[in-house]
Amino acid sequence: MDNAQILLDHDYPSTLDSVDAAEAEILKAAQSAGLDEDDEHRIGMAVRECMVNAVVHGNRYNRNKFVHVGVFKQDDRFTIRITDQGEGFEVQEVPDPLQEGNLLRHSGRGLFLMGAFMDEVKVRKAQPMGTEVVLVKVLAPPQ
Image 1 (cartoon, rainbow, N blue to C red):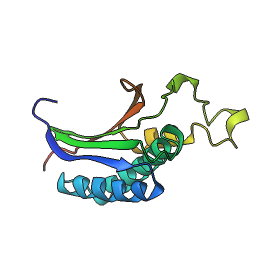
Image 2: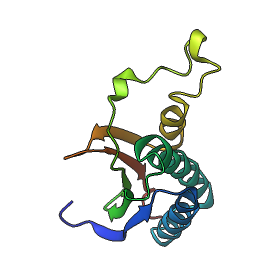
Image 3: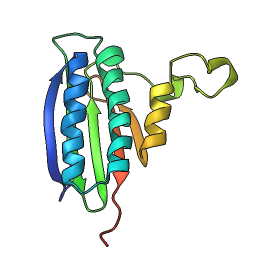
């Protein structure tokens, strides 16, 4: 991300209050990047799901662990990186929430929703530990 403009670079404690705080800061950054209200709403939903996953499943509310949030604007992309310090997981091992036997299970639903609300979602193990989720919203060309 050579010419990326950094809009947010912050560590949040592993608490549910951090979910609200991160969402508010990211939405402020989205507004400053010129995203419209509909996109802000979609971003807010995706960020909420991602932050809850990071705090609850990744860091397991461990007060010694943090969730790092980075927000960047580069050319036509608004990118959010959310990284926890948990054990990490393999995304292909998460059950598909749309398969018949999984419809009532919660597992995988957050990732599915992030994909529905964002233009791109990438999940990978972070080094030395944790999970990094990259959420991208493509910006509309200026009119």
